[in-house]
Length: 179
Image 1 (cartoon, rainbow, N blue to C red):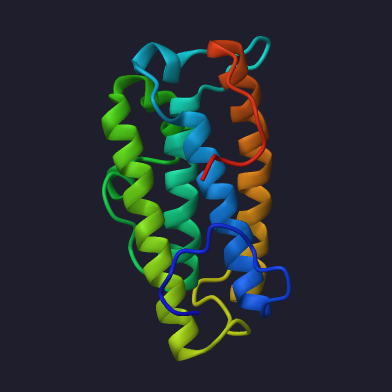
Image 2 (image 1 turned 30 degrees about the vertical axis):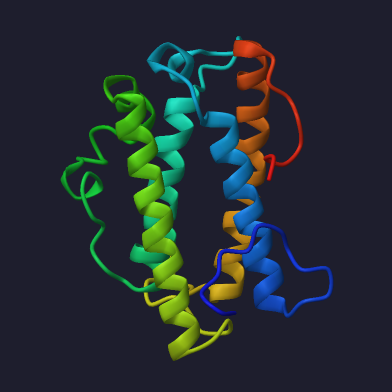
């Protein structure tokens, strides 16, 4: 990979380029589904679900940081995650998103994605796709490969949620963000 952000997985690329391309496609589609909305749009719900696009943005920002900063590199999570009492408020990111502006939510997510890209690049330079995460879960360390696949799945699920919510707001539909 040449430090470029892949918009699509290559048709016949390497394993890492295919995984990163799939993740980037999901990130791009998710950003498109959340983009251009005001606070009311990011707070809208599609009953009976209580999910909001703002909550999804904040949740996926946390997941990005947890997977790549926390698990992969065993580093402390950056603000705002480092000050949350997760035992007292395990759903903090979902609940607190309503207090954040659209700009704050999008910036939080974009910054987390950028940190993740750098963390993956660092991991690939030092140990490749087979290297194990420095922080284990349930006594087991996942490989970078597994973490990437897990994050692709996380985005796929939540982009589906975002698709339904966004359609209910303004009718925006489609698969894959426009180029």
